[in-house]
Image (cartoon, rainbow, N blue to C red; front, side):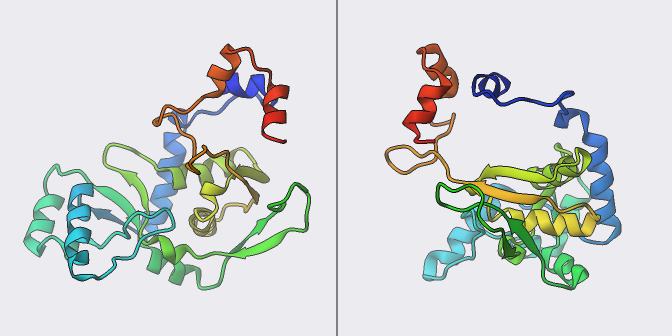
Length: 237
């Protein structure tokens, strides 16, 4: 990524902060949320969630999904008996630490929004909009796991605040996740940046490009001799 940014002519501020060196900051933020009574341990595995949803939908019913298309967490009680829940809690079973979204929104007690800059067109600087937060659509998001002390949602709001970020530019695939980030910022009393979500570069089939699908990377274009100016022309930027 650093090589890609250098090739694109994007300057970087030093020193670079790495998430692997910020676990203590994430832990403190998580403890704040735990002290508010908004975090609980969830023991259902991904396979158990998939099985529950598949069984629920066998009769034509539709289980709710978050904006990314993942099933809303049903709660341990939907699958496990009280005895099974206690057994997992007292054992070495894996778990996720989830935010109780309903309680979090109740704790905040007011509508939230975020400032969205720019536009969908080519003009970058259009009047800002206030976008209403719809965090309930995400259900109880994961904040950390037994073997992972943080999550994207928790890390990004803590990192932005630590670095004094005032403007966040990122892809539209993270547009709806901003609702979760605004909730966390409010609960943790962190500053609210201004956001702008840009269009994504898609493949011919309309799919988002990704390494896992072995799509063409910026590195491969560099190795073919393409310049970043040529790339910008191809993308009509």
